Image 1: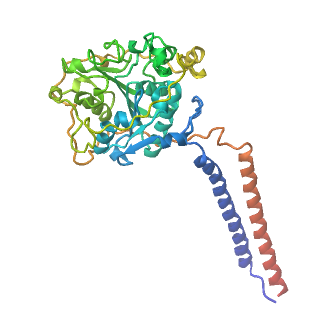
Image 2: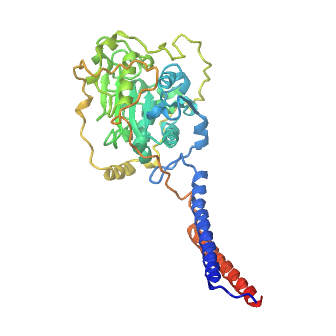
Image 3: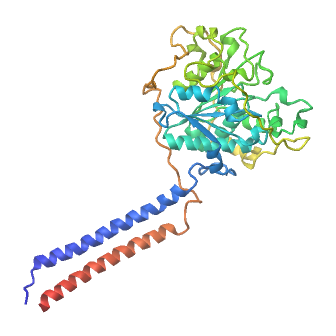
Length: 438
């Protein structure tokens, strides 16, 4: 007969409890992993709670993106380039801002909008929404958006109606955007183009009325509009069509009198480029106060070291977009943008900010030049210019929640704890029995 040692009993009892506790910890880990796995397999780049529902497949948007530059961006915010009508992202930006910003150390992407942006701008905007969220998720930073022509409308529409986009966009730069509508799209022959987006760009369209109702620069997004007068043949009237109420509106000819910048050449213009860099590299929008007059002596930034494209390169194949019915009609407003929904959004977004005086052109200062020489290595942005935004957190939506899932997890945890306790008790009784019978 083996004498029973109470210390062994205590040790076995404690061992049994430890086994039960370990099982509970494992079960808790499994329970935590269940929603995490659901979130990781969910559509993390889609709309968030409170956003309009997306009809686009995020995987298709990912496939339509072209990105250059280091993933971490050297501490800089990533940049999304949004192209205009009748072109693709590479045709609009592949020979200028895409390689140029990548050579400066930025993470920069283009996204091809459907059918060369001739269809409904509202639907094309959904590609911008997904692309912004993807860049924000990958970088853990806010995103800067640089948009040319019609692309400015997609960018502004995304910021206007998707609160989740408004929360993760830091700078929005419009290059020759038809922000107030262009009379070039309001002619009697425009419906014969079979281009619904063209009708949305006409002054007084339902689309522009909804976009510009109330605050034209909602949220904390720093908005800059850069435009040309007299020589932009498509954004008319030149003096007002590209302006955005409440933004920093910068007329190129006010900085460099007599400068000839067309609707297309603005994406290669050295003065516009210097203002874009100013918006991207410092807090707030670009300002004429920091502009260096010597930049007026430059023509284009294309061809600088590190830029692999150029105006003189061979033209790429240009597939013809699938034009719609003739005569075309303006697409109806999406339900979220209709007047009743717009009134509700305005009532919940706070008071409308007055127009900022910073949009007016002022006398350029001799200090703090905007023109930035190309760095040989990624420049370190001062802490005041870096975005201190936390990584984007994905909030669970109805699509990622399983009905009753939380209750099932609790039941599973309790079952595992009970089983572990029972196993520990059985082990203790068997040991005691062997000790007594021995």
